Each structure stands twice: as structure tokens, then as C-alpha cells.
Amino acid sequence: MKTNRALLAAVAAMLLPLGAMAGDNINYTFFDLKYVDNGIDESYSESFEGESLSLDVDGSGGFALLGSLAINENWHVFADYAATDVDLKASAMLDDLEESVTIGGDVDDWRIGLGFNTALGADLDGIVQVAWENRGVDFGSVTVLDETTDLDLDDDGFGVMIGLRGNLSDSFELNGSVRYSQVLGLDLAADAEDDILDNDLLYAVGGIYHMDDMFSLGANVEVGDSSAWYLFARVAFGS
Image (cartoon, rainbow, N blue to C red; front, side):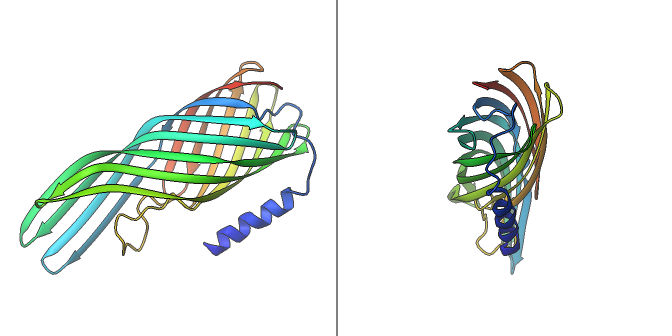
């Protein structure tokens, strides 16, 4: 974990002194409407004398909104919200009595932050973003073996993203990034060796087709302990 943070800090330190203006045709004032698949696919199990517990978590899709606003040539602010679905299957055995239950839940993700962008070429930008993030997972009330529990998970913390945006032509843009998040790991069990819903370090790549200066279509995939992807329509403002 400390190594990952040190790597992100080192790359950011190299980019920040490059105070050139943003690439000529790269815009940081836009609004995205996205369809998102959260890529959650995790499991956890434990057993002890006469008792056992297993949990399987499978995510699915939903919608998201992203807004970005350029403050000046080198700085922008942004806010990102996603609402997706997740299913939890819980199985428990106690004194030879076994019961399983499957419930649906909601995943809400927020990212609000500040970004620095600098030109590395006429059509290539380097980007560093720092965000305050929150992930909430709400499964409601779960009843297993006559015991009812409100299973709501919530965490917040900081995230850092380092990336590149580059125009291949007037119509096509490619982008890639490495993102570290403190909040994507949420424990379903306090003594679990690995966090459920854990994606601390994620690698992303995507592309955008610009139909004109205002309207664009794009797709991204983000790979960590699980793989999430999204499709989006973008409306840009200014130049």
C-alpha cells in the first residue's frame, strides 16, 4: 500500500512543474451521462466448530453522471456520481441448521475533487486529480437463522488519479490512467484477510469519438481486483 502511494506521489511530482497550457483541442468543461457496470465480484467464507458462513457479492449496472469545469488553462474541478446494483448471497449453518438468502442492494459512489492538467504536446495532456470519495452499499435488512441485521456499508477517504489524454485526430481521443482509492475496500467481515469490494489500485483505458465540438460518445474500462466498464455520451462547452 505504501509503495503504491509513493509511486503516485512521484509521478505527480514530475508532472506538476510542467505548467504549460492544456492541449489545444482538449476540453475540461463537459458533462457526461454514463451507463456503468461496477464489476463487483467477490466472495468470503469462514467456518468454525459447528458453524459456517459464506458471502458472495455480484455487481451489475446502473447510471452515472460526471461534470467537469475548467477554472483556467491548467486547473479544473469535477464531480462524479454513480448508482449501480449489487446482489448478496449469504449462507449460514449453525448446529446442522442451514439457511441461504439472496438480496439485492444499491451501490452509491461519489467523487468530488480538483484536477491539474498540463500540455505534454500539442494534442497530449498529463493530468493529476485529487478527490474526496465515498462509497455506500445498502442491502437493507437481512434475516438468516431468525436473526435480522441491517447490512449497510459506508466508507470515505481520498483518491488520486494520474492520467493522459491525447488526440489521435480531430475526431478520436485516447486516454489512460492509474487511480488509487482509499474507499473501494469495504469489509463484510471484520477479520477478513482481504476486503470485500476491494479495488485499491485501478488501471483504466478508454476512447472518445467527437462527433463535433460539442457532442461525443465514449467508452472506458477500469481494471483492478475486478473489472468495471462504462459507456457515455458527452456534452462539451467552450473550447
